[in-house]
Length: 168
Image 1 (cartoon, rainbow, N blue to C red):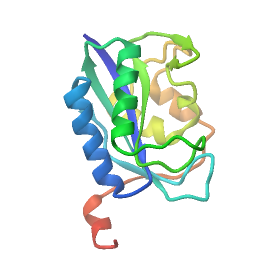
Image 2 (tube, rainbow, N blue to C red):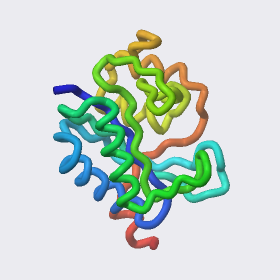
Image 3 (cartoon, one colour):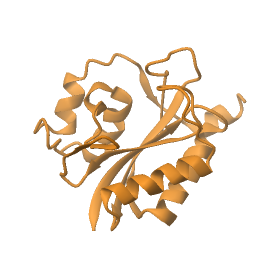
Image 4 (cartoon, rainbow, N blue to C red):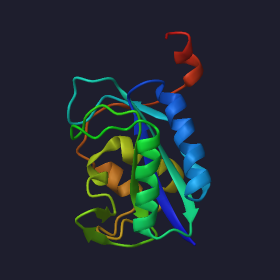
């Protein structure tokens, strides 16, 4: 069994419900969720003229290989209506593998650890919440160190679904 860290996020439709649906599908199809960060809201990264994103980091235990896991995650995205037509574009759900044990994989269709995680506060803040001492096998730095060095200046704030329900 392997320990894997995933980032789930989206900015279309009922963003919070989409995260909850993705979590359930991940648990049913990929492996047991051991830890979940809080849900965080942040402005879009890359293409900024789109709705804010909700993101959450999950730690799962799985017996799936990295490639098989990626196939299942892409299947969940498709079932939830994800359409890939623009890099960094709006989406109902996005599921990324951040870490898979301490593996380093650099292939055309799969890169682990996620290649841009150290440059994104919306990834590092929830990672620090549930795994501050986790060490990136590439840099040999833990998540807290990576967060302190992160050049990203976007505001990342904890999301409360009950507060936002009345606004919609």
